[in-house]
Image 1: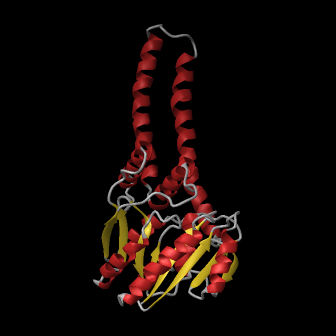
Image 2: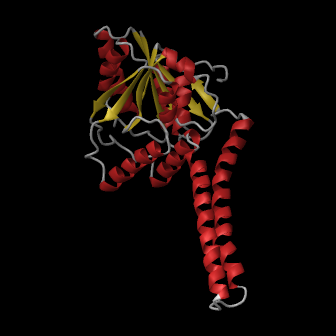
Image 3: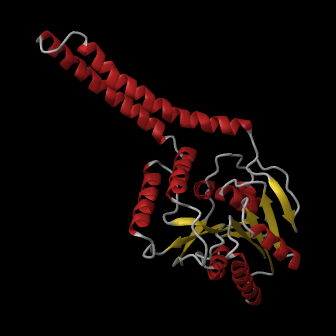
Length: 317
């Protein structure tokens, strides 16, 4: 078995060398245990502005097992992961972040689960004790909202996973522009297993997912995999319509009772209900129309500026 390890990164000059060493030592141990025969490490530079690409060039020059993909600009973590997966050549692919919060030592256990016939192995955090209270609450809210919206997710799983070559082939047929990997792999429906681990703190550097990006990420997942918001719009619209009928009756009652000024009834009802409802749900529908707009243009997920120890691949889909 040849194993591919995909590591997306953005401005991670402080951790690249340490991450490379840790992953290489782990993979060397797996070869010694005869769990794998060969490996490659695919680093995907998501348009870094620091010395990340310079360090990656050096690593690629020192070892043909190190592959490097560098984007022309920052396209986002999910697209960087997708690029690494699409350019991998292993019989199995493991994706993990460059900050060493996901321990490479877990790869051996993931390979054992794969050998048992599982095409996808999800690494799931055992606890969130090291997170702040705010982070724990927002993460819990994120996964609950996804479940309510009908998005099939693995609870507390980020993007540390192993997928077989069969799953990679299936993934290549996904032609979406609005890509949400945490929803795509459960959607593919292959046999899967879960392994649990304790997530560590960042080795160095700062998080690349502040609150603003986390909220955008959550909204991307909901609108990419669920039409529940549109159904909610219909339900709320019906509720508002029924409420409006009641208010119309009340407004007429007040009018005939002589307790209103002229024009009040005909102004208040449409202003507060019909106008507000239209603005709210036109915006929601606009979100989905915007996604359709992006999908029909069929733009590539990313543009590669340079590659090392790799050849470009045909487009997916």
